Structure formats: C-alpha cells, structure tokens
Image 1 (spheres, rainbow, N blue to C red):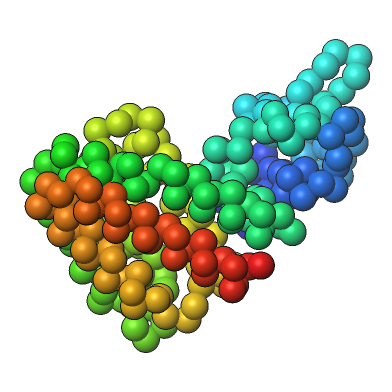
Image 2 (cartoon, rainbow, N blue to C red; image 1 turned 135 degrees about the horizontal axis):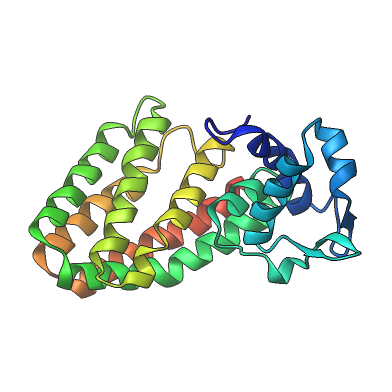
Length: 233
C-alpha cells in the first residue's frame, strides 16, 4: 500500500523498490522508463520522479543511452529506512534482521553509557516513562503498544548520548523494531527479562551510572540476537 501523500510515484516505488531489493532485478539489470511507465500506467514524468528517489537510495543509476541500471548491493544506502523496510519485507529478512541487530549491539550499549553521562532531566523522565509504558503493554498480546514505547525508548537513548551520529540511527533502530513486530519475529508477549532490563537501563541512566547502563543495554542486544536464533534462524 502506498504511503498517503506520496502520489503516483509512491505507488511505483512500493512495487519496484521491493522487487529490486529482493533481487528480481539483479545488479546490472537495465530498466526502461518507458516500459515501466506503461507497466504502472503512469506518465514518464511520474516514472522519472520514482527513479530519482531510487537513485537517492543508490539502488539504481541513470546513464545516457543506457537507461536505468540496478546497482550492486554493496553500493545501496543500507541505512535508508525505506530500503530497510523493503528488505525486511522480502526473503532477505533473516539476514537483514541479524545484520541490523549486530549493528545495534555495537552502538546502543556505548550510547547508553554516554546517555548516563549526558542525559538531561527531561530525557531521563522520558526514558522512565517509555520503560513503564513497555511494562504496561508487555502482557495480553499488546505488541503494537509495546512497540510504540520500545521505539521511543531507544530513540531517547541514542539522542541522549549527545553523539549526533548515534542520534541519526534512531530511524534505523525504529525500522528493525517495527519490522520484527510486523513480520511476527517476536514472541506473543515480550520476554519479561528484556522488559525488566529496559527499566533498569532507565534507572542506571537516571543515576548517572555509565558502566551499568552500558552493561544492561548489552544484555538487551544479546537477548535480541538470541531471539533471532529461535524465531528467524
């Protein structure tokens, strides 16, 4: 389904993007915009707009007298939230989930330690509120509500680190957490131990205990990898 407000080129992207990331158009494939415009029943200008978006993600490149060529996977902007979403929707999901979770395990513990040093009182309060929201939605198959607070929790951690590079990874983490829920790579109710760990991370950040915050967050990411071994082997 196209995202509201994205128009006709959004409809094209919602089909063509996943086809490219799923390998239906292997690297080096040449896409003819006139043929694609006919296929999707859109004007060439709409098709060009869709191609520009795909180019911005480094999925394709346009060459004069050649056409639109699919780029190698190694050149894709794998941090683009839309590219992540498309890959999580395809057969590449287990590998993508593992790759993103390993990234989280490398970044988030350090970010949590920094957050314990730099978080404002407002950020500490927000973190606690998110953790309590996770607790409140951790039973009774309330995964959507749990997801909302889980995403917010990890965004605060990354932002409160004071590192602008970490903060920009908020959308990446949001996509992997959302993808796990939407594609049923989650237990019906979250692991109680993981929920408790989030509460303890919030407490450690509020107390300014950087070593504890980092250690607890590392436990969260290790647990997330272990869940993938069960749910997305």
